[in-house]
Amino acid sequence: MNHTPEKSGPLVGVVVVTYNGSYWIGSCIKSIQGSTYSNIVIVVIDNASRDDTVLILEKEFPGLKVIQFPRNRGYAAASNKGIEVVMSLGAEFVLILNQDIVLEEKCIEEMVWAAQEKGSSAIYSPFQLSYDGEHLDPIFARNVVGKSAEIVSDLWRGRLARTYQVEEIIGAAMMVHSRVLKSIGMLDELFFMYGEDSDYCRRAKCAGFYLCIVPSAVVRHWHALAQPTEGQSRVDFFFERSELLYLLKDPTQTFVHRILKATWCSFRGFWWNFRRGQIRRAAESIQTYFSVVKKLPYIERACRIDSRMIKKALMGDGK
Image (cartoon, rainbow, N blue to C red; front, side, top):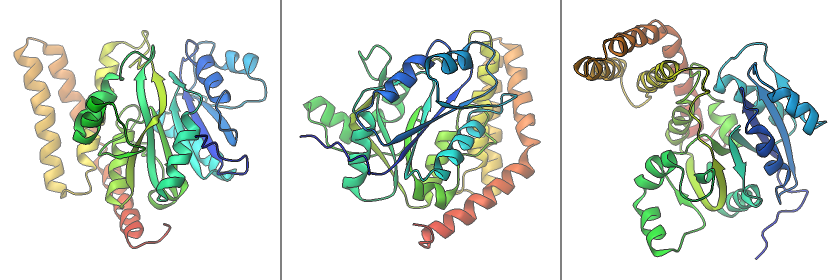
């Protein structure tokens, strides 16, 4: 059965954030342009790439809207700029993609059709496979599929439903309804790299919105966690920083509980590395903790803004 929406159907704004993505970006954009869903607009936000990413975009995709940041402002800030652009063009859905994603041709079509069928404002995600398409993306398998007994059971039986409501969505590929964005705002730019998707999904759930997986929509994800030039220590720093920010922004906890959880998390990381003889990593854990604690005034301000928007959304304003 063909569920292809008409050209006049809801506009989908596709936002791709790039940073030194010359290896993947060509395949990513070609897969979007090859979609069976035609009512889309694509915006690429480049975070001051030092390789040929922008050159490839200009040469292979003339006319594609590319916005270049003079410096790397982080994934959330770049995504938000793209969201602003496509929302100003009237997008009803915003599909945010990593640069190392390739869409199957019916991916957008299936997600839009599922959203129209469900008839509710939500955040949608496709099934995320490895880049070769041979198996599930490992983080998607662990954090999404592995936490849903319903999906696991249906996979075992070989009969998947149209949609599944889940507790978490991996932000490498997520389609957000415009009502969600208008109700709870955009991604939190306190998160430079990693964690912004988990924070956003938690805010959406607190505001009463659903998180949905659409198995018939499929993407393939390279899942390169960092550029080779950046080093593992930089990756570890941003992972730990994001984990602490996530704990400190929990709208369901009091200020004291959030501080205690973040402190315990940092101490646990320090002690784990110290016992293994990784003194440098142990010291970096403490440094990361204090670098985040210095941001507490900004974190608390963000929490207050989130709380107001969540309360407003629950009261029905903007939905």
